[in-house]
Image 1 (cartoon, rainbow over the protein chains, first blue to last red):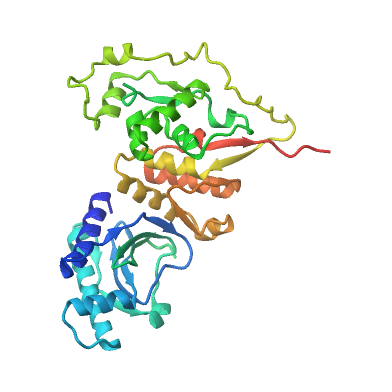
Image 2 (image 1 turned 60 degrees about the vertical axis):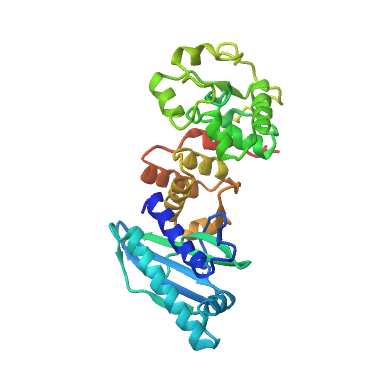
Amino acid sequence: MNAEQLKIFQNITLAYFSKVATEEKKPVLQEAYLKFDAPVLLDYTSVVFISGNYEGCLYLTTTTGVLEELLARHGEGEINEKTRLDMCRELSNVLAGNASLAFGADWTISVPQSITADQISTLQLPPSTFIMPFLWKEIESYLVVGLKSKGRG
Amino acid sequence: MQSTKIFQPTWALQQLPVTMKLTNMEWRFLICSDGRATVHQIQRRLALSDKERDFILNRLCASGLLTERVVTLDEFAQATVDIPSTQGEPRTFTEYLQSTESAPSHQEKSMPAFSPLPKPSASQPAARTMSLQSVIQFILNQHPDPTAGHLATYQVFMGISTQLLKRNGITSLRFQDDRLITDPELQTAIAENIQRVLKVPCPEEVFSQTPPPANK
C-alpha cells in the first residue's frame, strides 16, 4: 500500500458522499491518527478484507444518523433497521469497488461485509489501525486501514 | 533568503542540558532540522507563517542550537527540488554558498546559553530516553508527502506489539504527540521497525540522556 493508492481510496470514498448530496457541504477529512487498542467501531460498519504484502482490512464505520441521511437522499421514505442495513450494504459495495480501484493491482480484495454494532464481536480486526476520520453533516465517521504482517496474530 | 537553507542541530539532543526549555514549536523545529530538510520544508510541515518561521529560526540560531549545514551539490539539488524559486532566477550552488549568513562555524561554536550539561556518573550508566515526537518527525522527514509520512509512521508502529505499546501507555498516536519513552524494549522495537520500514537506522538524535537518580 502506498500513499497514492491511499489518497485515491480516500478521495473516491468521500466523493460518494459529495455525489449523494451535491448541495450539501462536502465531507471533510480530519487529521489521521493511529490506534493500538480496541478498534473504532460505530453503529454500522462496511468492511473488506485485503491481502497482499500484508493482510488486513479496510472499513468504513458510521452512525445511524449518517445512514438515515443517506437513505433520505436516496428518496427512501421508510427508515427502519432493514433499510438502514440495506444502506450499509450499499456502502459496503461502494467500499469494495473503491478498494478494488485503488488497491486492486497489488491486493486481493474480499467480498464486502456489513456489520451492525451487535455483530462487532464476530469481526477479526488487526490490533493496530490507521484511522482517517471525516465529517459529513456534522457527524464524524471513520475510514480505517488495519494491516498486520502475514501470519502474525 | 532563509527558506532554501538547511540547518542541523549544533549539539546532539542528548548533549543538551536537561533543564533547557523551549516552546513546543521550537522543539519541533529543532527536531525537524535534521541537516536534510530545508527551512521551507520544515515551515510547511509545521504549518508556520513566514513570521513565525523567522522568529523561531532566529531564536534557535541566536541560542547556538542550530547551525547552517554546508551541503554537497547533490544534497542541495535533492533538498530544493520541490521549492519554486521566488526570485525569478534559480539559485546557483555558488550563490547558495555565498549567501550563508553568520551561522557559527563548528570551530567557533559556543555552548548554548543554558545551564551546564550534567555529567553522567561513571559508575551508573545514564538511562536513555527516546522522544516519541523526534521519532515521528524523523519518519515524516523521510517523506515529502504528508500522507506518505503518515502511512510510513503507521507501518513502523504496526510492527510493534500492541501489548508493548499499551504497557508504555500508548493506546493511540497522533502525529503531534510527544512523550518520553524509557522502556528499552520499546526503544529497540521502534528502532528495529524504523530500519525495517524505512531501510535507514534510527538516528541518535531521537535519544536524550536522563541522568540516573543520585545515590544518597
